[in-house]
Length: 336
Image (cartoon, rainbow, N blue to C red; front, side):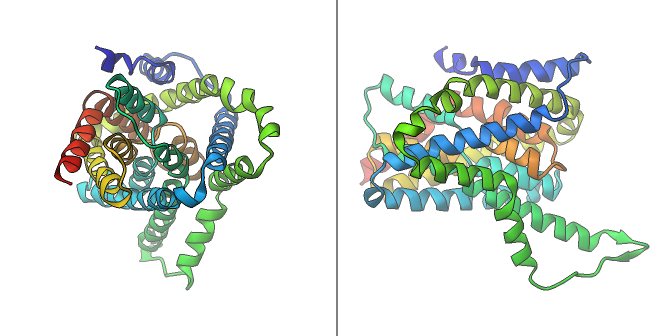
């Protein structure tokens, strides 16, 4: 029963409220610029918080965890993108936006896993907390790279007066990289993380109300707006629902297994620490990545990535996934 109660958090319920409001054709609407303001706030707040956590760590000891966090954040979206394209049910831009969510992390799922370990008296290393902060950005960058590559492919094959468009130039990869790393979402997230890491700790304390006290309230408003948007485009999800639901259940198992292997074999963590790395690999972001994709890939359908991350993968991980990743960690530790 406690597992299901983890779904009854205000952020998830506000997403459900927006979704239902649109389905019943309520006149509830957000001012056009408010969603962008909320997106900017969330990215800045997450970046600052991650930078503060990074500053607290002993980077000499944490370097392996940081490297593997980066690798997971880069690898998992590529796996997800390939699987989504293989379904032939969503376009490449939707696949890129969805894949970015599955390379990033869910703080809610991570905190639930910590509560799970605490309830059983299982200790864990602090380095997965650093990995949590690190894994937000790489997946967003990869998602933007995949989206930019997809736009290029679409442009080349789109008919223009009955003929395919020509390839407009060399250095296309360089253009894609520049677009990804100069994208406003990435600049905000990475820049805020650097500020949080190098700023005077006492000065950062004055931002505590901004980064912590009002964060959940702002997240609730953002997810309310995203619920409205997802409800508006829900018919698209129903059209390809079976394929996406299958992905939303299979991808966390794939990512969780990879995370457990990294935690045990590559980082040498305890069962508790390995479980948390597995959870990081398995979770799908519904906080950092949605505002980034909303700003940078407006062509992508929010009902796809939000319904998957919040409506499929999050409850699956909370109810079923976390015990599975813990069991895998125990099996690896027992075989060591």
